[in-house]
Length: 213
Image 1 (cartoon, rainbow, N blue to C red):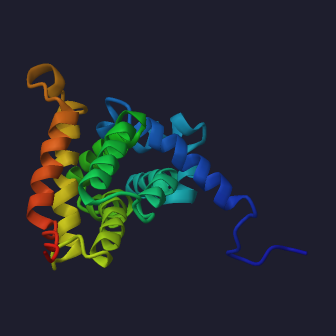
Image 2: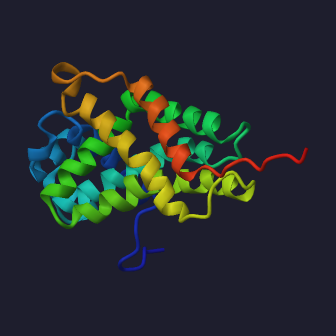
């Protein structure tokens, strides 16, 4: 029986994901910001028309690569949303250390590539936000919701609190890693995390209720 006009091959999704994975690796190379559509096709081992068939244009390839990055990070972000075991300060510090630990394992590439491409091409800014930055902040927002339910947070916008927690850490990690700050302006990341979480908890943590005499 002939396939209906416009229907996709059964392996279309698998092939598209494979091509997006290859594109992600090429885009994360030092010269990835300047890589052309033809070079993306070559790195994936396909022709330009084939790559165009799956993604239409260069921006489509990059958007799919960012989507691929989100899928890779989804299990780890899910871990961050689980109910915390300990009190606010200790638990949040542990979560931030978990984020920092994952930075050299691929998170740096996701954020550095997404930022570089998103700032260069207006269409890709929202792709970076939706596929990488927002899933990260939303995972922290979900974690903070557990503390709010336990009465350990002041009455606040959880989204603002999550951004206030995560954004400085992302900047510090980019500063030391992809931007080369480790060589010209080194920072003890763990000491930074300890002080940052303390100051953040001072601002957002609820004061413990004094016990009756």
